[in-house]
Length: 632
Ligand SMILES: [Cu+2]
Image 1: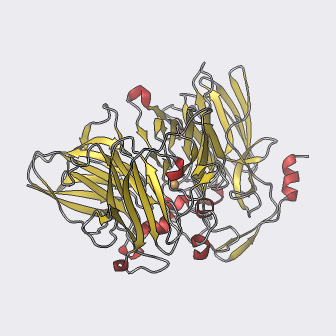
Image 2: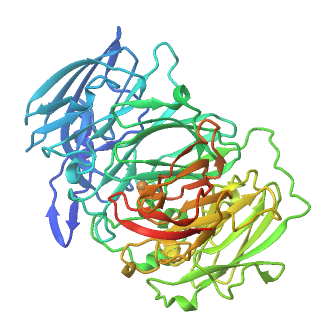
Image 3: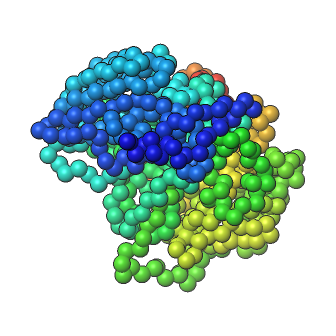
């Protein structure tokens, strides 16, 4: 009979354990993962005929041999269930004739997204399908763009509240431009599974799965390109969580952003921005383009650190600290979830740039902060920075955040990272366009015969790069990120046109990070402090505010500049170290929503004396941090 059933018979009976309760799971069919390369259905004479079914099956988001979990999923009739669901992909103007059968054993289902995309009434188009029934819909695809369909069995659910067995009921819906050849792009659906639907933030004590096209890192697809290729991704955040997606080593252009119903193409309204991190809200879509110029191994991952971390196995066995601290491969064993690995092969005949004769030498020392009162579980670490044998900062010990590293555009630097911790570490130079070997992803970054190691305790690593553009960047560990960053390891990396002309009284870093102890009530550190010292400004003078979010979670903080309740205006000048196109470098009321791993530069000229505030507010409105500004 069906190939699916044969596979199911060979699979190992699963036993899912949550919170100590063992739930025996019947032998269900095995769900396959989809790479979203093959469109579903049959397209003929401008009509796509597609027949889908909803069923339950066993999903293996980790390795295929690891335990599974039972979820609901979509299948094309006569084919295996797949996560994400079968991709609907048609040229503009295509009529879609879809039949959807609800073969779930126990529930009615509500289906969203089977309606003309880009149309005003698309959001209200829902299909209710009773258990065992089929529905047929006919509609024209709509405006070209990146969309998705999704379903739930819980009445009233939306993409934010969906969870449990419904988490994976999503599929891509792509409308291509009529008459143009189909672009050679890749479609990635980002999902989040948790045992039950709840509004509470995902914890470390429940097994959770963040997946890209149905798999967790390091089981996600490995992409490979030749240097100089033009790469296009369509990203679909079908999950209930915010994902600031970060690309190592290269900027990407954000060509369009959408919400599943409408998709706005930037080139038609304004210049597309180039960034290294783009925040994707729940339900958001984006299409991005980039060119891998330099060979090596690179990551594309979510910068909400908890989403790129290994979670508990389904069988209930713990992830112990021992597992975290002593591993063979830091990138593969300590990361998990929303991470993709990308190999960029050298262009044939390409030669590596020669090593410059001279490099400015800096020494960055990661060490225990004795003043921090840490424990092994919750340590206190910090960095010190030295140049020519002398500290660059007046503080005698490590500081939180680490000292601001100031480098000159175009000047080769060699930063020796010294590890005086009792555990391995590594430093990622976030946003810097550099050689893969120095990118700071231990046991992954580098070249086929030369992979960068983690820096063992007592050891050091020399990172060499020549920053090509001035801007606001970050340095932070890329080993056990959540723990090491919370311990105090992160800092600002500023690339400037002239070291002599850099004026810290007018060029101000506002770095947002997580407090060392959870006891600090979820507040946010600004430049390492819960009670930051006032900033002094003068009327009529021009200030540059470099706002950095290196918090390990909180991907939705909003920063504003206010006088009492009045919101002041600032001019946006750069994002992630890249100057904004002139049509976007505009003066506007101060408000920026900051994903993790994003940097934003603003110019501000105070108009009158008085007391101002730089406030950091949670998306729900609670104030998380506030910096007084005194204008004279
Ligand atoms: Cu994320």
